[in-house]
Length: 123
Ligand code: HEC
Image (tube, rainbow, N blue to C red; front, top):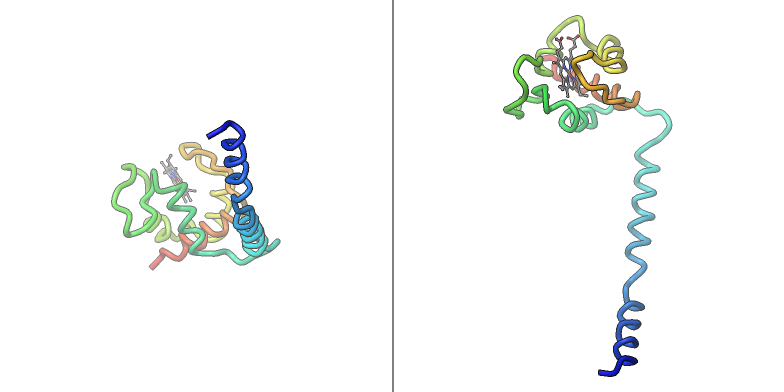
């Protein structure tokens, strides 16, 4: 194969690469994120659970299914069962975390979701 043929082949291969699926995916992601983040929204327990599993489960037991966490750290069920920590107090605590906890810079929506998730664990 001559150099010219090789170049032409590569050029064709390049042109055939479909540009559309990438674009369509981008638009879909953009739409999804626009739909998912309206300015004000109700706290979402499922979202709170996902945040808890991602950010809190290394230390806390955040659900009944989770089997291991750090000793001496209250489980989310224990926290939920406490009368003094729910709704507003929980929201205030999470906005300004306990010194032994890393400051996770949670957004107000994430805090509201977490607080309602933890509240949902109270039996
Ligand atoms: C690095 C470990 C660590 C991580 C990560 C962590 N915590 Fe904690 N958390 C602790 C410890 C330790 C305590 C107990 C503090 C104490 O009793 O003095 C605690 C206590 C709490 C309490 C009870 C506060 C109180 O007044 O007794 C709440 C509520 C809480 N954590 C929520 C969360 C949430 C929500 C997350 C995830 C966003 C999280 N924690 C992530 C270590 C952690």
